[in-house]
Image 1 (cartoon, helix red, strand yellow):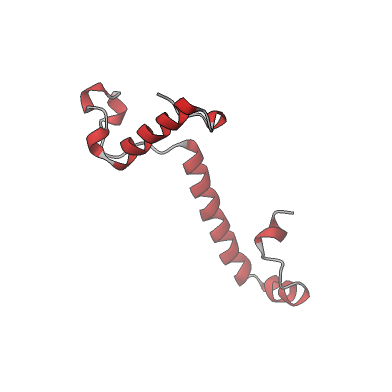
Image 2: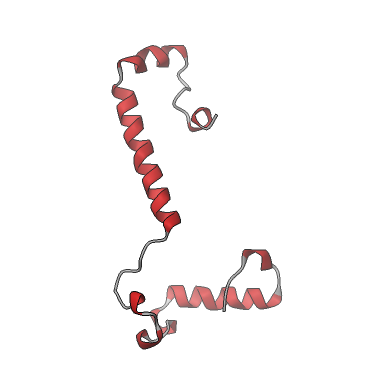
Length: 92
């Protein structure tokens, strides 16, 4: 059973969604440990690359904001444009 975003609204996909939610919410519906791959026998699941990238990005952003606020240029730039640090401006 696999969930695919492109199958949204398709009858069988709705059934898969239901079973996926059950598996996530309850250990009773999980596969028996002996049937799982060995790397899943650990109590902590490995993190996905996307999760690691997101965590790294948030940590880097937070560190940069801290350094920027301590910068001697911060006060000058803040007087010129107080919205400079807003997320929408940074994305430009």
